Every structure is written in C-alpha cells, then in structure tokens.
Image (cartoon, helix red, strand yellow):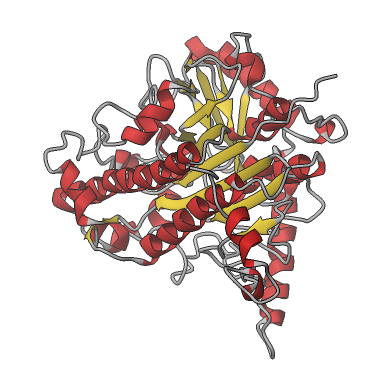
Length: 505
C-alpha cells in the first residue's frame, strides 16, 4: 500500500468564458500568457460542455457531478441542498484541507458545501429572490434579469463592482498559497479559486483594453439573425434581455467584445499571480482550469448564455496533473466529469454515491481511452418556459424541449449551428436514435412539474422571509483577529520562525 501523500489540488474557475476561444488552449490572438503556459503542460479538452448554461446550476453541477434535474439547482435562486456531496466533501472526508476563495453562487443556508474555509463572501445573493416563475411565461423581472445595457455601456473603467471582487479573490488566494507553504497543517490541500470575470458587464481596465486595439475578432462571425428567424428559445432570450428596447451599433458590439477579451487578459494576470505564488513557495499541485458556462458575445445577435449553442454551452477545460501527458482531447466531455476526475486523481472512492451521479472520470480519456457516454445538458431557468435538454454525442448535438421544435446539428460540418437537420429525411435515423436515448434519460413532464413545484415553494418562502426581521444567508468571512500577526499569547521567536518560508535562506 502506497504511503505517498495525496496530491495537492488547485482548481481555478472563471465565469462565462466562451469555450470556442479555446480550441487548443487559448486562441493564439488572445493575450493570455499564463493560461497558454498552463495549456502547454495540460490535457486540453476542446469540446467541454457545461451541465447547465447559467451560473448557479452550472456550478452546483460542476461541484456535485449531478445534473440540475437530480440536484434541484434549476436556476440562480434554487437551493443547493446540504445533503448533496461535492468534490469538497469527498476530498475533505479523505483528509484534505478544503478552501474556497471567490464565487460559487451557493443559494440557501449552507454556504460551505464541504469547504472547511471560505476566504471571501460571494458576489451574488444567497436567497430566493432571483426565482423565475413558469406560471408567468414571458415575464421580465427587470431588477435582476440581464439587459442589453451591458452592451450599450461597454468600455473602460479602473474599478467596478466585479474588478473589486476579483482583486480580493486573487489577493486572498495568493495569501493562502503562501500560508499553505509554511507546513503548519500536514494535510494535503485543495484550494478552489473562482473569479467572476470575464462575465459581463463588458468593462475593462485600460491596460488590458489597450491590448486589443488592433484585434481582428471584434465582430461576431455569425451576424444578427432577425427576431422572426430565431428559434423559440433564442426569441425568449431576446425578450428576457429586453433586446427590443435598445439600438445596438457595430461600435457597441466591438467595444463589448473588446472589453470581454480584455477581461480574459485581466483574469489571466490574476491566475498568473496564484501560479507564481505556487512556484515561489515550492509547492506542487494538480491544476484544473474551467469555466461555469460561456457567452454568445453577439453571435446570431445573442449575448450572455441561457442557450445550448456552443458559444454559451461550451467551456474551456484543462487539467495539469502527474501521470497525464499534455495533449488535446477532442471527444465531448462535461463539467459534470470534474468531481469524479478529482476523486480519481486523489485516490478517493465515490462508490457510495456513484449510482446517483451523472459524471464520469476523465482520467481514462486523458490517457487515450475512448468514451461512449454522451454529454448531457439541461436548462430550466430565466428565458425558458419549460425545461430544455440536450445531448452532445460524437459529431451530433440534439436539443429538445416540449414547447419547441427539435434541433439536430452536425457539429463537424456545421460548427456554427446554422442548419437544423431535425426535419431532414436524410438524418431521420440519427434523430430517432438520439431522441430515443434522450427519452430514456429524461421524463420531461416530471422535470417540468418538479421545477414548477420548486419555484412555487421558493416564492412563498422568499416573500415570507422578507417580512419583519431579515436574516440573510450571505456568507460572512470570519477573521480571528487575536490569532493574526503578533499577539501577547504568542511566543515571538516561535511565531517568526513558523511563519517563515523558506527557512534558513
């Protein structure tokens, strides 16, 4: 039996990063030197998909390895239940120190979900206030729904709500890496660092904005498709984002995309700070890089997420780990696969819960083995009126919704998803095969009923809890001031020695 210490693990998550910009690591034209260096030593998954193209459901699925229909996190205000094991639970149970710095959009009274320590609060609310309502199809909840002001207001600023947040996330993460190097805790560690960039609003610092002055990618590849020519879900996204109330110019589109690319460079700098601290403190760790979902960035006229088109649903994923040779994997994979992959790499068994998870370990695939399981996606949040589901298998993507016509795309011949083959007789057999596989997986009527019941319960609870005294669930980071720096119950000689790394140089 091996007595080797389990590997340390650093997980870096970003928000709303379009995976089509990472065909094999960051695209050549992106100014992202730290991510490019990480890609050179990583297994790169070119066709990685979110489990759900929205923040909270995408993140809960990523942490648990469960689709929203299984874990109940349907939207940005659905509770992530405490009895659902996450990779933080699995690793902590196996003896890991587990820490989170940054966003994970936990909704509900449990704001830890297996993490022993959180270094920051979250950037989004933890209550039920952002609950959609299928009883009111087409309703816009203006105070929290996306609108196109992110596009019309794109530009430069030196500080924003989100820049302030991510500066703090990186600061605490770097400090934690150095603290871990002191060896005061003998356990292996898992540190998750989760940024909110390059999520809109599309506003960037000047130093990063200037990097893209001559960028040749400031206009979408697929231009605006008129509203009448959009599929029903895209029309609902147009409506939900109040697209009709704004007049968008090419300059606005270019400024939005430029700021988005600039914020990729900003977050690359922050990731570089963390990786530099890891190197300076002479620590080794498995490094996982991933996003929760993508951003359409004006393709087809769509912005943000909420759709299964690749700009929204495809995300970058890279894993640098001992025993995994760097290289490119083209088979479709899912963020659902990260939880079992982390456990596999750490030698932690998930056998007790595997019958109720939807992901599979990627270690075999990274080592050249095949994969027969399709990638599954779900969406049951704002801009939908009943759940949507999707299967990506091989070259095919099938999108289903009881309210909409089927969609079938050949992702090899039609990567821009412009030709729906669902009504093409030449592809009837493919449609039938994939549809049967989807129907064996999903009971869409039951899924819809579960979502409606959850929404109705949460509206009652939220309205009740906002009456009288209000006790929010937002996480309050704790700092024990009497245990920081130098205090009179400490021996200064011991303190100075124990806080120094490396010693004797």
